[in-house]
Length: 255
Image 1 (cartoon, rainbow, N blue to C red):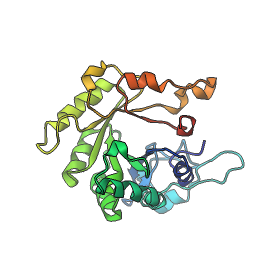
Image 2 (tube, rainbow, N blue to C red):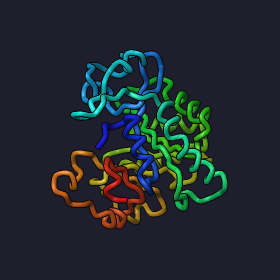
Image 3 (cartoon, helix red, strand yellow):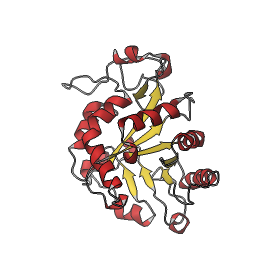
Image 4 (cartoon, one colour):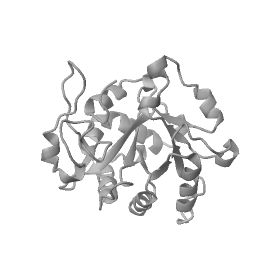
């Protein structure tokens, strides 16, 4: 595997035939720049120490992401850099949407699921910044916004009413609760249109409760069964539980 949330990993993802898209996480620097990194702190993935919000972009760019023995170190990318890298694939997807092709029938191109990391620290203005960047770069049809924090999704919708949203939580039931609550706030958002993004091991509702909804399940990397055992996850089993899409660290094992 390649180091998470790096230009190398996203570039390699572009080479995988049949991959629908990538998932990434955004946070704000001290000087208000959108950067792609999972943790609120830089300690785990870089040679630095401290909170992302306490670094300027220039300071973050001086850090190194360890990629493994014999592999060149990476830098924390900006959201703009990632979009620029994926632009050829994103444009293909956007063009297909504009031609009226149903999203579940689009076989080429890629999407980005952008998780706003606002449940621990509520970065002021992050929602407006990401919507403006996506609009500026002309790829809004290829973007899904997700967050554990419903307030961020509310703000995204206020800035971009056509934005596709996904609610995150450990439990499927909590995802459904959040989604129904958000959908009730807007007349222009049909019931059932907000996607559910639960942890795949916590599908705690009968499939009848989520029929008609998009359910994108995520799996924590260290719990992938194929890593320690060589076994493969039974995707048919998850589909029977209502899962329509999955987030994997190693999608090439299933395509």
